[in-house]
Each structure stands twice: as structure tokens, then as C-alpha cells.
Image (cartoon, rainbow, N blue to C red):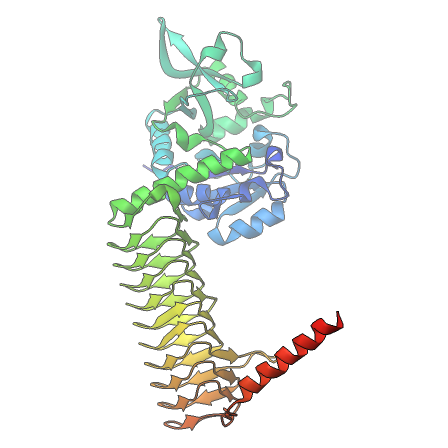
Length: 477
């Protein structure tokens, strides 16, 4: 017996007028990813990505560019005339499949397990159309499921899906809604899809009408309720976008805590969907972990830190207010408080980046320290080197960026200016307040500070002159 070919079609052509945005609806983000990306990821755990078809329309090229790296196929709906019209555009693409499961690109909370349950139910019951349904606390605005009654008892057979504006007073009391997620027998769907009409308030082709058409011909149209109504919630407004974001982030924090991560006041943190955190790491309140951040085990991230696309080893401490993006941090390093790691920073094991220190495209070797008030840009710094407070690497001359190289075990005195390109050898010392423009060999002292001058009694004489000047000025008044 051959395995039936299954495709997934995702409706992603809408504009999302009520969001009042220039951005296509399905590209609005929750938990750090576009709405459509969440749906594609869930679908890709059920079928291969080459069997997923995103139906795009509004700002089609923009959506294609954003989603194409996920490997899906695209079908364009150049004129948006409803869900039924969208599926009509897939007739050729889906011709080789036995079944198609239709998802909405703005329903990002749908879980792979739920998609699989619809597929399995559909196949087991040999249904022509299976509808995933839900019973939310408030069904207003959703199409309702009208089940067939047999011997005064409702069955899982569906008579029709009735949109909100077309409900009769009796049907308004129905609490079961249409989720917009369906599975069809492809041949039965396309044999009847041209019978859809636009005789409705919006003048569009509604895919929901297929339920009544199939049912009238005696083909099985079945409803499968989901246990979690939140999974089928869509996004039409900014408030709904925020509500779904909160649900997904709460789901993420629960998952992390179940896997051994301590999160204090989880309702205050912001952790994106792709973030990974090792066991026994502690996350304090008001932390943001964004993008593809991955933290090792036994780390500590203190309050008000924002880490974006950061990779860390084990036992790393991020003190309060650390800001870091697109960087790596080695085992047992200490960052902050109030440090900033900009793109391309590589902080070695046991290294320290302290108060108000900023790095950019800088490699800090094992055990190296820059503890205070320092800027290190385009620099390579060796193991165990100490960078004094107030040090800066002058890496930009107005046209080009140049590199500063500092060897292992060097000591850079406070308030030093290193004008790149320049190299400081292993074990070298740089005197405080020096401006270094030439290379300093290993084990040497680099010093540009002028000789100190002391003039005894100078301050007393100056105060006498100032007082005399004040007295003369007051006499003129």
C-alpha cells in the first residue's frame, strides 16, 4: 500500500489592514520571528519543506525574500479575492498530492502535534474535509460550526460553516468556531472549488463554503476539536499581536524552566523562540535574550541585560545592564556591569570586560582584563593582558579601519591611546596617559608622557591675582 502524498498550503497573501502597517501582515513578529515563520516551522515537522506551499500576494516579493531561506515553495495570488480564490491558485501545484492541509499564516501558536492530529484523524476517518475547531471564551467574530444532527444528537459530521455576519439568531449561540485549518482530499476539493460563489458581504470566494457543498453530496465533512483554543488564535490588530507574543513567550519560559533553567519573575523577561539555555543557568528579572542567543550551563544573567545573537560557554556571569550582540563569550568569563559587546567581539575564557567597557570586532584572550571605562575596537589582545581604565584603540582614521594588536601578558596603563595600526609585544608595558603611534617590542616600556613640572607657590600667587581682579571689578560698579 502506497503512502498518501500530503502537502501543506499556508494562506499568507493578506494585507492585514487593521494592523495599520506598511509591513505585510505575516511578517509582523512575535517571539523574535515573523508570524509566517512560526507556522512554517510547525508545518515542517509534519511534512518535508518542499511539500509546503506559501500562498503570497500583498508585498509578495518582500514575503518571499524573508521566508525563502526556510526552503518552502511559493504560489502567488496576484489578486486577493478570498481564501477560496487563494486555494484555486494552487490547483497545478497540488495536482500530484492526495491530501492538502490548509493553515493560516497569521496563526503562529499552532503546534506540530495539533497539525499531526488533524492529518491522522482525516486519514483514519477517510474524510473528504476535516475542520479543526475550537471553543474560545468569546466566539464573536469567528465562523461557527453547524454540526449535523442524527436522532437528535450532534455528531462529528459538519453540515456547514457559517460566517459571523451570516449567522441566524439561533446560530449565534453556537460556541464552536472554525479555526481556518482544514484538511482536504485534493481530488474532491478541486472537483468542486469552481462552484464557490461571491454572493456574500465581502464579494469573495470563501473556502468555508466547500463544507456545505461536500456535505450536500454525501461526502464526509468532519470536525475535530482542539483542546487548546489559544492555538488557533489569529492576528488582526496590534493588541492581538501583543497577546499572542505573551502566550508564546510564556510557553518558552515554561519549556526552559522544565529543562533546568532558573528564571526569576518569568513574566518580566523577554526570551525569543530560538534562544537556547543550559541547565542551572539563572536568569534574573527584566532580562532580554533575543535572536539566536545560546547560553551554556551554570551561567548568570543579571537584571536589565540584553543579549542578542550571543553565544556563551559555561559559567559565564553577565552583570547588570550588559548589552551584547553578535558576539561570543568563553567559559567563566565575567561581563559587566554596564558593558557593551558589539558585533564580532570574541571574549576568551576567564576574561573580564567590566564597567562601561565597549568592544567591537575585538578578540580578548584567556584571562585578559579590561575592567573600567575603555573602548576596544578592531583589536587582538593576548592572554592575561591587563587593559587600564580609560584606554582606547583609535581604529578609524576617517577613511579606513585599522587593527591594534597587543600580545600576551602585556600591561596597558590607564588613559592610554593606541593609534592603529599598531602592535604591542608580549609582556610589554605602556605608561599611563601615553599616546602610542609606533610599535612597542616585547618586554619593553612604551611611554610618551612629558616630564612633570612642579612650580612651588604658583597656586598661592594665582589666588592673590584673582582676588585683586575681583576687588577691582567691584570698585568700578
